[in-house]
Image (cartoon, rainbow, N blue to C red; front, side):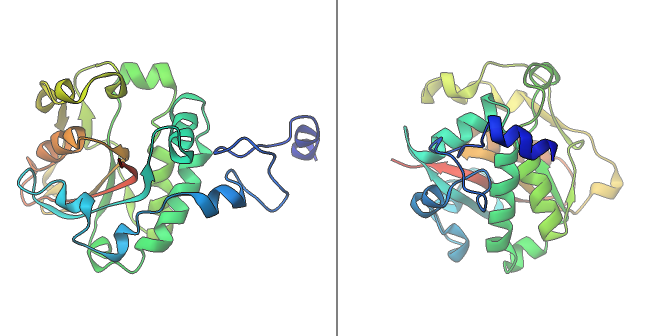
Length: 227
């Protein structure tokens, strides 16, 4: 009743195009869902996201759900998720992608889902990690443990999106570290993030996780930058 009253005065709008949502639509309107650029990475284990890390880190699997284009629907979704407090976008995308990933034999071998962490100061400033709900939705629908305590960020830094490509990787290997016990040995970790751009952040996180004896790494993201 209370929710219906709020919707009467503040009707929900699409997180992609800001048009009013119909009663059967949730977060993203049907038109945006139809027009959103899907990568279909899950259909090809040797996809472009996987190849991006060739010679950089030993990954078991890599994929992203969507293509990220400047001034596109996906950029609007990620912006609203990161900076407008619309955490439900992560839940929707996680639930969506879980359906695609359910039949992957590699994903079925994953032990835990690990989010790219925010520094404690950044977490206080933003109030939430933008990939948390994405990870929790994957966790629920793929029946995998979500663990945000193994990997942590040691250094507070300005947002990567405001740095040019040449400077993004400067010193990034010193930013992340891990806290683990013998129980974490030989686990297959699924590292998650919002957007794959240069891959430097994911590479640094993977290097940190690979300090754990016998660790294996796979990567799944909401989107991948695409020219």
